[in-house]
Image (cartoon, rainbow, N blue to C red; front, side, top):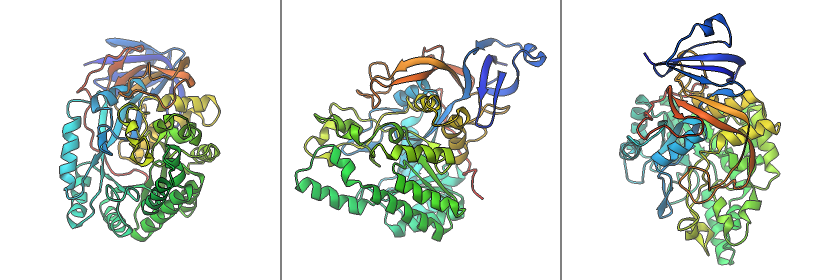
Length: 466
């Protein structure tokens, strides 16, 4: 029996805060007891981790990452090895990545490709969603089979015609299937057909700089697509999870649906909370570093997103981590913003940025844990194995120093990308140590993990459905 005790920290979950010691046996949490209590003092262990003056929090669950994703003639620069190692450095102990079905391919083929990419490479635990690029009779039947083996969420795109795009009929059919099999449809909600018209017009007029990426992907086209996705889900009687919500108008559509009691959920990302179109407009093509879709919005949208997180109209903060190096990858779009690979690095920064939001008064400590750990675990069928500190849960634990100060920089981050989207940003709070299933993978700011420690984790269905 392998036992570890974490002593003296402030344990924070989505529901409680307590000065407690945590007993771990064979990779799982077996008990909590008040620090200094007779029960806690009676524990013996091979290893004791002192957490006095620090927070003891669940490992983060990042439910939206894209390791090794092919896009625009290149591929995301983080492998499953480098990306999960960086996630661990940032206090995330589980990712849910996206396996991709290509047009003309079975879901199983795409899923098996992603199993092979990740197998033996991950430093932390991982699971998969399934991107459906080709909705047909065969792939609809496959959805049932995948739900049965723990792939319980399916992403569809209203954007990227010719690549990932599904029309309303295909979307409706996939939603009807998910209503039957218990799966959850995740939606990239932007009107891609209209956006492509605006892209063509902008380029024809010589508007080629990165900032035009944001200008053509208009707020109203995100809001319209969000509204349409909600109505299709209502027709199908299916739940809906809208990814990377970036704008106040799209959030208003989610809030209105939730006010009607619909099973509609929303995710936002740190880039929409901390960055803006000011970054897209940076000169000398620097704005290309901030090209992602949905795009960054004017700064005034941030207040609405923070409010949505406080009111629970937005339930999850994920990263949509999809890094492309500035040199040699983002540069593919010089002279044509539509050729800039879409995506930002961020899997290492999410927990720290959200702690800064606690410091700044946007959210409470427990809400931090709720939107970064507990809710994504519940949303995607991983709770209570993941997302909390409680007897029976995996010992995915972060010792977090709320007083440490850091400056975010590509010079010190661990993601395999040559820039940081938050370069020079000063943050209060930093990960000290990380345990993944009881194994110390970050030990006082030293990486002690290994590729292959992370396990594939099948998922149950969404735990919020009526």
